[in-house]
Amino acid sequence: MYPGRALAAMEAEVRPGPKPKRLYVRVVRLGSPDRADQPAKKAVRAWVDHLDRVGRLVAHGELTDPPGDLVVLRAVDLSEAKRVMRIDPFRDLPNSSYELLAWNPSTSGSGVNLEPPPARGSGRLTFLQRITVLVRDQRAAIAWYQDVLGMTVRNEDPETSYVEIALGRGAAGLSLVAPQPAWGEPYYSEAMGRIGTGTGIAFQTDSVIALERRLRNAGARITQPPRVEPWGGVSIRFTDVDGNEFLAFQTDSRLHPGSPDPTLVVGPPGERPARRNAPAP
Image (cartoon, rainbow, N blue to C red; front, side, top):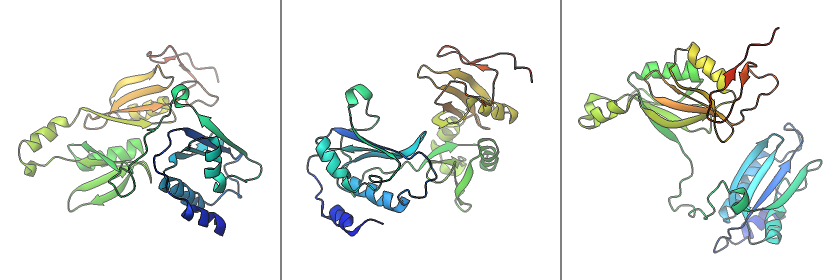
């Protein structure tokens, strides 16, 4: 819970006029992800919503390695940024690292749109909900996405044949749609013609090599074997049961202790990782 004076300050602060474009990043390193003295998630959400309402918020998210919390905000200068963060629920957390630093987008890249978002209620886009994937047999497709990719049915309406699958709560979903002749022409033929083409959809994985094994064991077609990308990760392309192509990637191509494939040797960017003989047990 916020102290009463903090809540009063949040409500009293006037939404600024022209939004400043200087970015500042606040980083908190907790040391342990299971700390019992962390601020309640409800309180953090209320505070982040407040930053959004007053036009300060650019991005917010949890850090995993090391565990912590990150906020990117707008302010005229560092002094103003410090004033904005005076009611940060993470500010006085003991035994943690707290930093508020200037972020130079020209040298570090912003990773975000520096222009202020539209005001609330003005039709701003808030969430990517779902993407349509066209399939021939909806039930067979559902089984494949569940058994091979580990997705689950999030919404389903048998009366309208609507099915939405996802990797979990908060993730964008895939709406599996089987074209129907009742749609009429040219809509039906155009939809059927899109089945078995590239979707442009990319997944992130913790191991491209392990995913490749799972896909091959399931009989999926690999259209691009694992390869190291120029940006340092590893990617793979594959198709579903209807030939719709997807990409999956992992962000780090380096081998780590306990790698699911100790025979993988990472080569130059753009080349497929080679394999060496497995070490003797």
